[in-house]
Length: 278
Image (cartoon, rainbow, N blue to C red):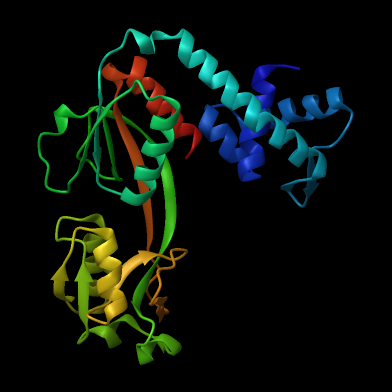
């Protein structure tokens, strides 16, 4: 039994997809599949049920996954303690332009495990001194040609409105909202670009009544009925409901861009942490 086998299994257990594991480790899918089959042979039990080219984690796999979660956490902490982190006094310079709430949660989780590592974190769409940052969280674009990148999250988006809005129970076309006010995260934000692009495709420019760069205030404004906004499909804020807009089929993919020259010590530790939570 090899550590890499267990790593392949642990990642595949989270996604139930060998191809995604292969992409993450940059190896052929057949390598992941063969490695997990060898692990099952060594353990003399199936960890995944395989039906019609799909794999599903079974009861045996779930027990192993639970055990490995604690084991890998302890192993990663031990490796961190033995590497250059104590000698590396750099703060991690982080520019966040997407998934701010989720990234905040990850920073808190990481800082709890590594209290000696400090961050300089900026949540700003207008920042232009990009070379000052070790890591940038943003959607896919060509603004960061000197940075390596990997995908963090992909999410389905919905148009959202106040739960008391009579449009909540109707199937709509986007053009039917042309006279309704919208709330935007700011003209430079990714969400605004997605909204503007979708509305322009439907034949109108969204009438933005409020610009708000704070996610909590943004959701409260939508709940109050002051306008329609864009948000994650699975995000549920009290007083806010998803609109059934049949031709609004937008997704939002967020990447972590990191400076390869800074990829060691503290920065490498946090980048690897993000990769393991992507």
